Amino acid sequence: MSFRAFLTRRLPVLGLLLAVLWLFQGGGAHEVALTWVLPSEPPVTEARVRVVDEDGAVASAISWGSERRPADLRRDHRAFLAPGAYRIQALLRRADGTTKDVERELRIDREDHSIRVHLE
Image (cartoon, rainbow, N blue to C red; front, side, top):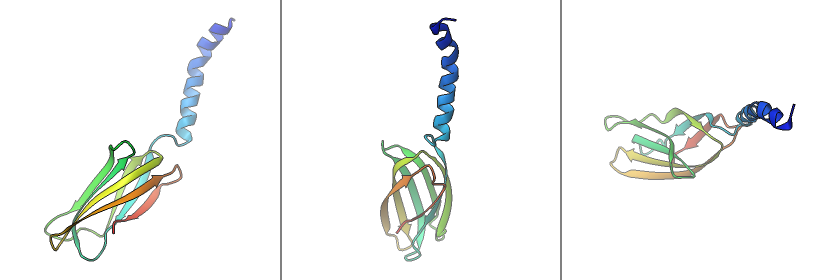
């Protein structure tokens, strides 16, 4: 068997093996349970949160609450995020009619499966 024939037969298997190893090393996105925690005072009626990646693309977003009643102080959110740096951008509408912009840095590692974020 020639070396070229050997490579032609083994290269697809090697490529598949490398792809599987990369996935198990955590290089891809995995589910992260994010818990958003709102300040209790002044009451927040609506919250809009975006998780933005390093390229400026929205990786995940959530909003809750309404003008009729205060938003829940805690909201669980499941997102599929790859390891890396993210920016949290939140808009909080308060019962008194004011708004507050909140920005935070968020770092996701392979080991992260549950993160609590305070939006104060």
